[in-house]
Image 1 (cartoon, helix red, strand yellow):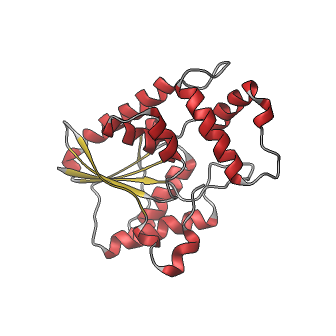
Image 2 (spheres, rainbow, N blue to C red):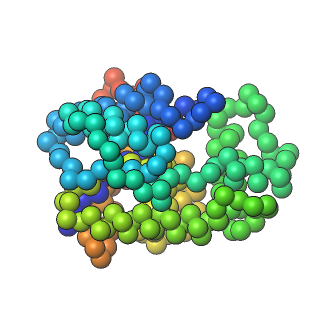
Length: 225
């Protein structure tokens, strides 16, 4: 069977006007992961990303660490993150009193997002949303089908986002919507989920590993945003 290395993007620019780009640390996390793979002697037959800037920048950093030249990556928009701002906003239309204060800790937003995602999965949010929960699941499923078509590449590197990666695991394990919500907020930046796959099946081998950040001097670089 072929191997899939499904990687969450590096740390994005939380709190900045444009979230969809890597922070300085995010770029470094990606390079460190590529350097780790180079030391392990890993070679990838194919690189696939979502279409978001943070996906592309992460893949470029990994390739830099691997010592590979700049390249145009295969892109599948099914790997993109869902619009968490729209989902949270729709939830707050129902429960405006739950809106965190401007200076509230990040954990308050995470709690809000978990509630909003649950309501989204139950089709309880008002208004016109960018996509339904079932639409989100369907596009991630389409991305997985595309990945399965690459089984002849032997080892495939894919860069995506936490929500899409959690949905992919739900599909593979046939688990609940609640599992997506819990896993979404646990995925580390440049965390790696490892699968074996062929045209007929995908099997989970490991989840959310950061082998390039395990040494004590890298503990400060373990992030979740």
